[in-house]
Amino acid sequence: MSDLNFSAQVAAAQPMLLKYATLQLRNSAQAQDVVSEVVLAALEKPDSFSGKSSVNTWLVGILKFKIIDQFRRSKREATLGAASDGDDAHFNELEKLMFDDSGHGSEPVAMWASPSQAPDASLQEKQFFAVLEACVQVLPEQQGRVFMMREWLELSTDDICKELDVSASNLWVLLHRARTRLQVCLNTRWFANHS
Amino acid sequence: MNIDTFKLILKCPDSQALIFAQEDFALRWHQRLALRGHLAICKMCTRTELNVATLRNQLSRWRAYGSEI
Image (cartoon, rainbow over all chains, first blue to last red; front, side, top):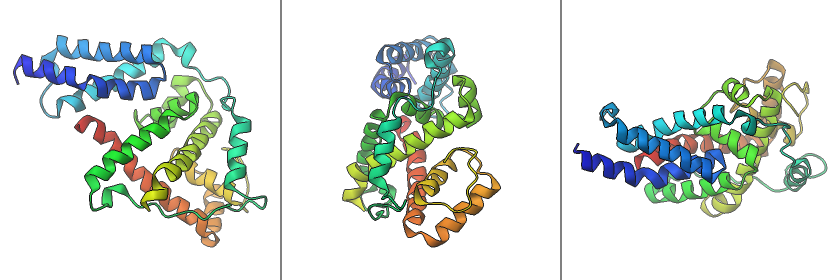
């Protein structure tokens, strides 16, 4: 691959890198800094790209390492104090809407149809992923951050607890709330119309 | 419901908490037992468990998607 072609691909990947960095870090300034570091690292050492994967896949790999570095640099800011994220009341309200007084679901649960098995799977998935990212974006900050660490950075729960100095019990609560909110959001914004 | 709760008879909110939790944590024996017992009699939570599996598959595809475009 020519240097010019490589540089163009790195430049073209920036919006994608910035989207994931912002979803993970919840701070646009930090996200831009991290993406700049990724781009600089890639352009300074193009020889480290072996060509075994696509340029984008390689850049996302670098981005994940840089984001973990960023967490370590700003550990104090990233540390999660309480598991509640200040949203105990909001979450209780949400559960009241989901379940009746006897603890049973207040509405029937629709079976979700997988977008990857739809006849127009490619288009459906592209649209679904946009909705998924929108739903992750509106999660409360701490819940969104741990969800992305788990699902996008693919860190183990032990590693997340170490990186953020939280107990397993706190992480349980944060991930439970994140996954519940995501389920409700996806139900409303996607699966209600695609199941 | 939290990571240490010991309950053998679950209501749907507890069951759903465990369904989500098993995506991230290894459930304890009593939690697995209680969840299987609840799922055997609750259609809604069984659907939720299947939906969580659908989402798990889509999240895996989403991780790959961003770097493919």
